[in-house]
Length: 351
Image (cartoon, rainbow, N blue to C red; front, side, top):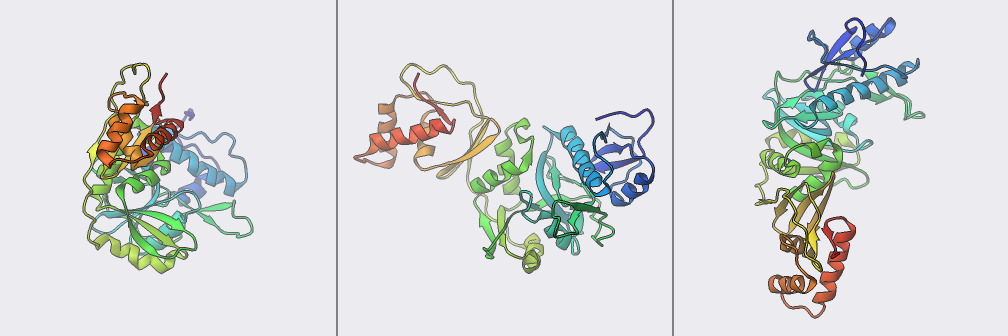
């Protein structure tokens, strides 16, 4: 970021953060039009750096949008959940977030949904612990030349006729996008697998206290999570809108396993690796180690829970058989499972 000598030419509200854009010349009017939904009279809390954006208008404006977003993400890191997701909201302020990686169809989905519901963002959904969504009504990045899909034009939501959002919005439903040949539509997702899918589509999640629990609580408060398997988004537009009124999924029972200090493991014992946060669901466990998340199942869950205190292999085999029943190959099965968990950085082998 840079701070120019004078005030920036325009200030835009991005995720609730006033960000200055020090444009000049003809770029000022162009950018004011593109960012029409986000213009604010607030003083800039941060100013975006335009260095190296070049003279190509399309490339400049697309890169600028990314930099503006990054400034706001940095300002809110550790205070909110920030997801790579588009969001729209109805007049009552009930927001639906559609989450997906680049290329999953977020902008297309929001462009269609926002003809029926208010436009909040096509790229980043940021919400606090009250689930209040902080809008990012950026220009939409639209491919205008199919022969050059990497060149995206920044288009004002006004030019696309997208509906304005309500004065405030609260996250109400969560949808994970899966574009491909499978056209089965909306299907409920278990919380464990929803969390595992959401973590890679988040920003600075590990800076939050108890990030996996925060996601679990969010999913519960939103009535569960759904996956949309689709080929053409327009075919499922009604289903997405109706999801706002659909019956919520019942919350799944869970147990929180927050990180805790690890004592040195006695010689010859297996132990847990340091973990950031974990939530246990029935026969699955969502575990964050560093900034990575894994879903353990079956024997993996049993062994991780058993290693609340370090234990030797024989004790772990006995514990597994006591809980899961006798098995002639139990020693080999437990040893193989521990080796896999160690390779994934979940447990630590004996010194």
